[in-house]
Image (cartoon, rainbow, N blue to C red; front, side, top):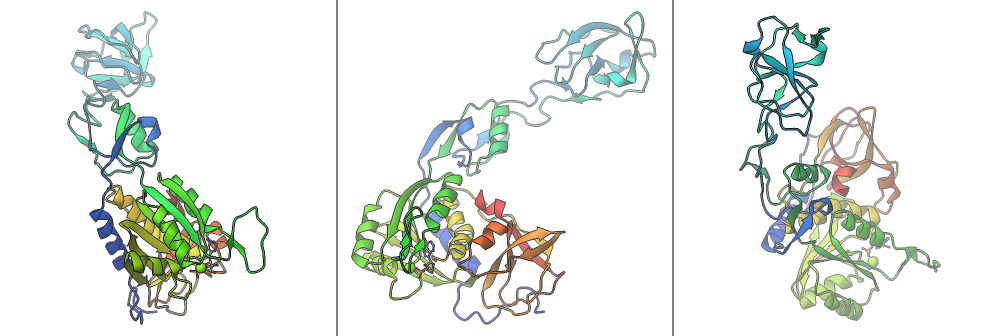
Length: 408
Ligand code: AMP
Ligand code: MG
């Protein structure tokens, strides 16, 4: 095989990382500053607007990690100790009487003066209810010290963190009832093409059902975006111009189709007229053509129309762009190396994102990798990245990007 990553004859194709860097630069240039305050239970998928700094020590006081007995180790001479109090979680104990022990339960505050908790399994309860300690004990044992997790003033989550169940739980543990988050990014979704009809309608000759619309609208909602479903745009310059003009109150117009530099490139024509257009030929497969421009100041990303191309280019380029507009720093999906469970004998000049899954620790790929076949992605649980210019034999390592990473 070729050494990994050796560029093939990519001609004038733009490498994926170059396209991503340009998109992120443009996102950085137009960040969304508006924010809103929401109950912590409602921030799933949203982006934290301010640093979350702890106003608490966690735990707020030393507490017991076990059900057992709290004592001061130095008080233990080998003689059994009297139980002087019982402390349940949620109670405030008295200071420990010298020479005694306290019955204590998991999560309960350790009484002042005690420096150790012995678990109940290691003691003997005598007939007179005194406690005989059996094992040697040491100070600090089974005590979760105050501030073990977090101390007052510590940065817990930086601004720009995307919030999910774990971050919501963490914020709640610090007593946050509400959080300031960046307002939702508003995305208008446009499907283009005279051949498209919506599910529920009868297919005429030459027509296909519009799959990208629901694919993107659903995905964007899941990502915490506000979706403006702008329907289907016919292949017509005047209508394209007019419809783009109506979408002036959005952060991004996201369209699919009509970006291959063909005669039916009406989106490109409208953008060219209205100012600004970059037409990129990307070294990516599926999904070579991608448009970026502005229509009267509103950013427009035109994704290729074949559904698997839409999926891959949205995942790797448009999604990171949208996340960055909201101030997210880490926008690239987690990737990891796995051995390939297939051969790739012919090097391509574009970086391939094969729809694949893991089987017995190896990445295998769907039998039909055509860019029109969305079924490949429904079968898959990840994208298998094969670099441009690379051939593979089964057992060599490839990069695997879980779909769960890119869908969330
Ligand atoms: P285009 O870039 O407009 O030439 O579209 C490329 C291919 O993707 C064509 O086969 C289109 O019919 C198909 N396509 C475009 N948009 C959609 C869509 N919204 N849903 C399903 N297929 C589409
Ligand atoms: Mg088209």
